[in-house]
Length: 522
Image (tube, rainbow, N blue to C red; front, top):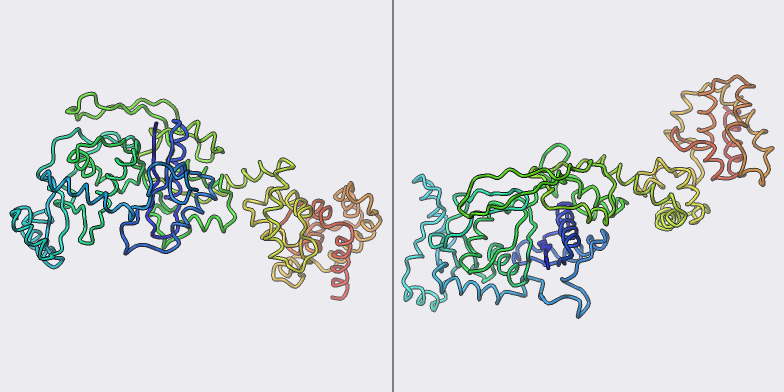
């Protein structure tokens, strides 16, 4: 059975790249009938941010990405791989470090921070690309034992000159990967002076001990991939399959940063975005054509193989539900290039997801119930905030609702009386001739008031007022602007027929009359 893991570090709120990584783990596990877990890589205490683990879990809950094993599941359901916090598995990492020391694949290094700085500077001046001169590798067992007994602090380093041969790196996304050891530090540290492991050792140990079959992680770890394969080889362990996922970019092509724009999932939760739309948006960012990526039959064969196109990439605004994503998703479909996250595509997807929801009675009811508390909070003194009324407002706004917050943002005139002194309202007045405003309202009010309460719902409002426009000869555009100003107080909005249907007869007449009185007094 395939087993995957999503292993974030608790260094802050989950960001969009992290949510996409969790989504890809979820999709692939479901696709192949496997499972996935949530593991927390918290071995770097200096970067730990309180409450970030809860934030990660809440983001996954909001997105509907339910993991099979991992932290904070009810007793008996957390699976056979606990504990899931790396800080609770320190003895395990130390035992593996001892195996490497005993086999000669690792050694203790007692060089201080200042000494290491001195060594690096000397090597750089000599033109060497090495970062350490391996001096502690040549300590005798007696010297090492004496230093340990004396309480000297040490790290455990991999002896990169004593690594057994292994097959060249292969990645599910990138295919054959260059074995670029030269880009790595010399004899990388595996266990730090505080006896906490580095990511290199901890991830290898945990993935093996937990039985992980597929590792999905960011492209930034591609340079360390050869090192991790070396560790598997030194420990005589079978490595899982790896898929390194290219990063997400801002619309301007720069790397996404927590200091630039909305990149945290909590921003999208608070922003009123639909989780299905956000997942759809993230999934398609980097989802390319499906290829058959051949593995080398001969480990010594380093020649690149040509992949075979199996299926074209979906359009970047293709609407997909989670079940559809699971059916179509393939790791070999992911592109090798970084992907730009275009906010306009999220707006498109979100709008169309909402349209699908409110097209059914149950869906419309659900949206109105979700919007209810926000509407009540925005208009606390309004008597027009019931769920039933909000359903009518949503139906009227429809195409103008890209995001659930748009109900409040674009529909304030439904919930509270309009302010004819607002800046937008005054701008509209500047484009009207006073006589046109007065004539229009004087003509329309008697006609509208002649419609009874019982007839109101089925009234053809536009036909009714068009007759008056023909009669008084006020230009059509001016005529409609006067009415929109009187009924909405703003230039944009639903059709006036929908507005008067929702606000009702009494409020329609009251607004028309108020505007008429003000026009007559000017």
